[in-house]
Image (tube, rainbow, N blue to C red; front, top):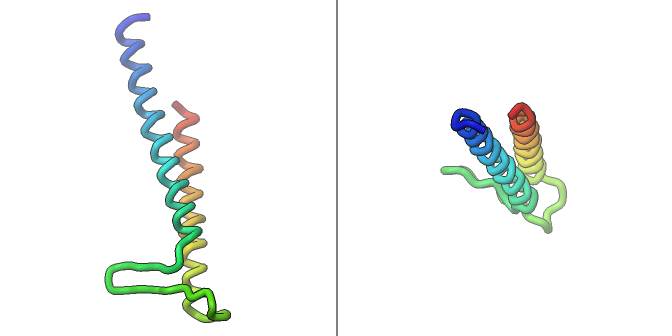
Length: 86
């Protein structure tokens, strides 16, 4: 093996590790979001109260969480495709 081949392989390994770390971060975010009890942003707060029956806050929060999970899963698939190309 020559130095150029070694350098090429090292770049691919580094790229692969970066992608795998990013996939892991997205999976952890999904896990955290699934157990959340509210959605909080700067100046906005949606609390999900377990004792309440169906209400707008719960409905809106569920949609926000589901959309986040869908987008995160799409990003994971994109990263997995990128990883497969390495």
